[in-house]
Amino acid sequence: MAVAERTPILELRGVSKRFGAVQALTDVDFEVYAGEVVGLVGDNGAGKSTLIKAIAGIYPVDSGEFLFEGRPATIHGPNDATHLGISTVYQDLALCDNLDVVANLYLGRETAARRLGPLSVIDEVSMEKRAIDVLRGLSVKIPSVRTAIASLSGGQRQSVAVARSVMWDARIVILDEPTAALGVAQTAQVLDLIRRLRDQGLGVVVISHNLADVFEVVDRIVVLRLGRRVGSFDVHATSREQVVAAITGAEWGTVPGETSAIGGNGPKETLS
Image: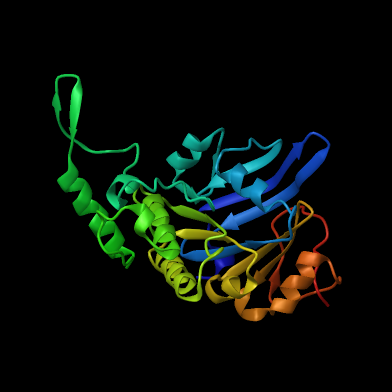
């Protein structure tokens, strides 16, 4: 079924956000479908971080509409986003270096085996088993789930952070610069993980400045410039030069493979 005929898992319509005198987002539309990887790109200050933090419930929007599976949704805070099934993995990964993989996957959500008066005994066995199952399902390769996070490579750390995001019924995973500062082999490991998330039917959003990685793994590219959505490109029907032109506003015209954004985002700034 064509993307246009399906209902997005998450759809934003006409979202705007201002910080004092700075208009960070202006009438932005954005959509993510099940089994799709969307690349969100743009220059510094384009509004990418503001948009994902609005989706994650960190920034309340000034105007606009959120729909989840076609139904109106309200996101007032991170708990609302989590409840809907939206999980965000930021650049800092928010992992505890001194704890092992199991402890990081369950941080704040530990499973209790039984209670001893006012205290609970953690069910280490079931936690370890599920951790192994989740990591195996994503083909994440680490020495052991009892390895301290500090001992893992950058790619393995990123993989653990992603695995944590999907352990709790996530429908959409947002990855902020997932390959930043990684080597070639580690980058390949993370890109493979993103493909597996898509194959499992999740909607994935990848924010990245690395267009080589974006073209390697995404299905569609959404470009923001100066707080506005200026294009949506089918990655198989466009070139890196065309995307760069949209990012920089180099030319105006129609780009092969570009699809119109939903609703009013002003003119589409693209390459002839």
